[in-house]
Image 1 (cartoon, rainbow, N blue to C red):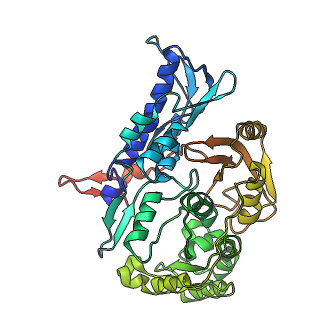
Image 2 (cartoon, helix red, strand yellow):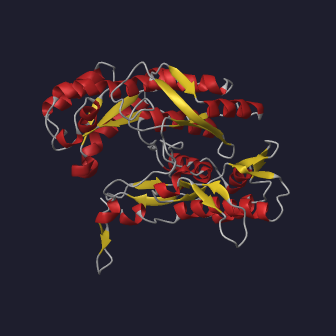
Image 3 (cartoon, one colour):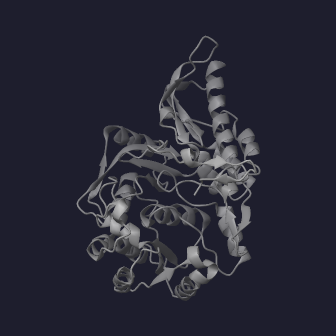
Length: 437
């Protein structure tokens, strides 16, 4: 696990290298005469690094007397790079090169888009990604095969592993389980509306993972008090889980099961209450104790998943691609988040007009927002109502094939907390790493 959580096979480094190669080619093109008339003030392609570093969110590059043109720039975390997203949405090297060539790096002085293909960068970028395009096969402690491939975060990207890994898994087993990151309002929605749509996948069922601790937190309990029984708080927090289940069933038309991940401090009364509320929606909540018991602790869940997979269903997307951009945003906010609507800030309104004019209005939406709430406010827990989602920026990822909508205060370059995990990570004289978990 330490190897997986550090460098693994180097895929993230390859994504970062390809991303930053394109940055270098952009600045070199401007330095060498700028025949494409790329406006340095309108460059949208940012550098990336696989490290939380708020100091790099906004920088000025090209300073000094050694050449280059000074301009404003910034870094994103690698998982937010469009290269990461399109790598996961490419089924072979040819498609990868096509998607890389479509990346929009900025705009000319006449507001025309400039692409990586015009800079002739796609071939070298694809060469750097040659091995990263291949899924990584690992196994659990009990020998179950697992494919780990890609890492676009679901709060700032589309939150799914690669199409190649998913389709490979489907060929190797009778059942394939794939993860979509964070809550079902983020990873699952994008898995359905972006990945399944592009790859032609039709899921059979959905497993929604929940914990009593998280539900009590949604009910107002402070994190340092989550180990105490609190049925009132649990009842207040359960609407969060129930809204996810309702969305899966009514919006996307799929059967689902709740994997109730048991902690030692969960009481029987709390577990019974959660199961009762889920049952009222026609969904079974199954206790899972895989952490403590291994595969045996997940057997009941596996049996329930097999059962619901046999149910008839009619999979739907939450919106049609033919809808205008604003209406697609409204559909997500109203039908998935259960908010009142969308508010576009002035910059986003201008970007909406530009993207529509450039012919990108029929792309799916990739909402970038907090993972802590259905809203764009991380403090609105549970299942809030009466809120609007504020969109401050709309950006096209033409290579990946979607429009990113930045909501609220979400950042594409996180910062370290007051006590960084790095303070507890160390390596001993035998090469054993500790402190990662």
